[in-house]
Image (cartoon, rainbow, N blue to C red; front, side):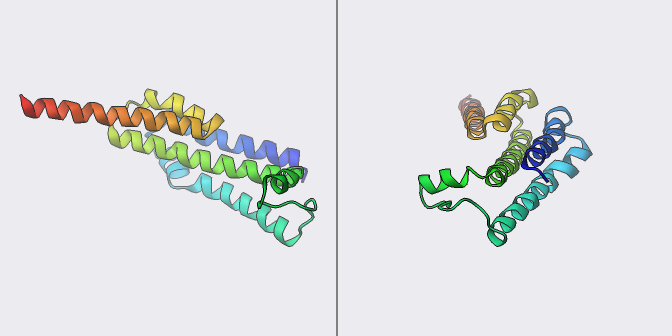
Length: 153
């Protein structure tokens, strides 16, 4: 299969899971399809298949590897290596996004407040997580301060 096609399939395969997280956060289907780990597992299997294929079949560019920036850059001249890396990002970003929604529900953070950091996690991984963790910190501080005021009164 052409790597362009695999890339497109991988991109589109995560969209329904992100849509469930954003539009149906409490639904049974979201719990079963996303929070159960099914989606990241499927992406993980895809990633594992590509990794095994590249290790057993090989065929990557000479000098490719992960031991130096130069070797990594050589490796990423291979379309299969790029798609493998991209599937890695998709799997971990979805896993982190699902955690953010579960965590926010547990802490009572309004769902709409998590949508922007989640979309940023989908598009820019660590940036969305950083924004969510910052928001989470201030949310928890708010309640810590309120509890202290209530105890003092």
